[in-house]
Image (tube, rainbow, N blue to C red; front, side, top):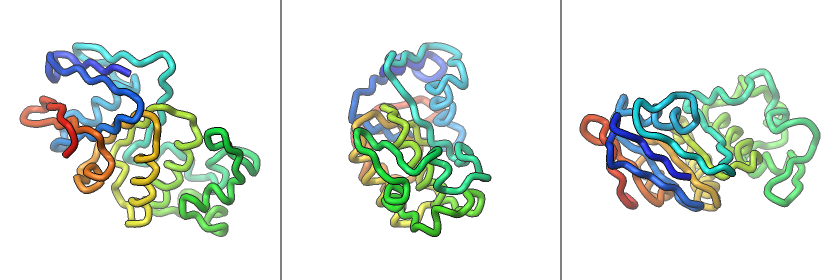
Length: 196
């Protein structure tokens, strides 16, 4: 995937992502980080420049408000109908798959509206990993996460074969996970650089 953002940020910015790239986006609030994600998702148009997505690009999005799952479903229902899910080439029972994301059997029967922020984040991640996406876009994924959930995120992202763009203020998380940084500095002008 190639992302080119024009004069509204920096006329010289050209960002190309390849499999395995995990780019952290950092900067002050209001600098344009979430706006850039919305442009990549096609929810907003750039005022200049362009965004080019590969024809086989399939995006999974983790929104910072965690509104991508229906709060009236039970945890097990969020992964679709039936008792089985497909993870890559492997068929897994939902109970075991959800246990990998720290949901005990009784937790899997709970309504999503009763989950904490960290529990919702784990469920969204579990659901995203089933979508066969090759490009993850994560907007503030580490908000409200406890240490076991952070470790789960670290492991899942480091082992992920596709591309990842993640907006976060968590420098420790980025230091462990990111392969590069897009930093919005000054008046929202981005500077692409290597690992923190």
